[in-house]
Amino acid sequence: MFQGYLKVVDRCPVCREELHHHRADDGPAYLTILIVGHLLAPLIHVGFTRFRPEPLVMATVFTVLAVAMSLYLLPRLKGLVVGIQWSRRMHGFGKAH
Image (cartoon, rainbow, N blue to C red; front, top):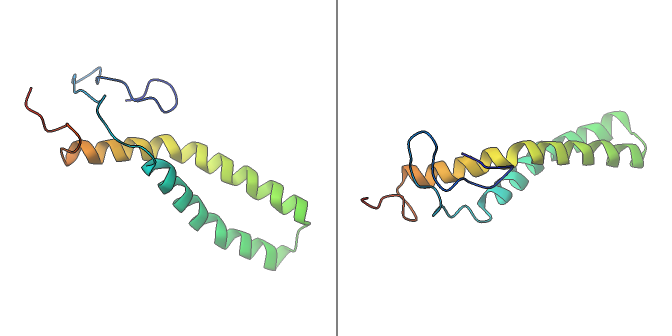
C-alpha cells in the first residue's frame, strides 16, 4: 500500500484499486500522538514515583520510547485511516469506474 515510509501508492498493485484520492491528512499524526501520549503518561508517572531516576535519564528513556512508538505506529495508522475511507466509500472511493 505504501511506496516508501508514508507515501500511498496511486494504485494497488494487486487489485488495481485507485488510492490516489485518499484524504488521510493529519488524522494518522493525531491518532499517533493520542495513543503514544496515553501509553507513556502512566509509564512516566509510575517510573518517576517508583524509581526516582535522574531527570536526564528519564527524559532520554522516554524520548527514545516516544520516538520509537511514533515511528512504528504512524504508517500503520495511516493505512488504517485510508482503509476506513475505502470501506466507507469516502473521498472518491465509491465512484463507479
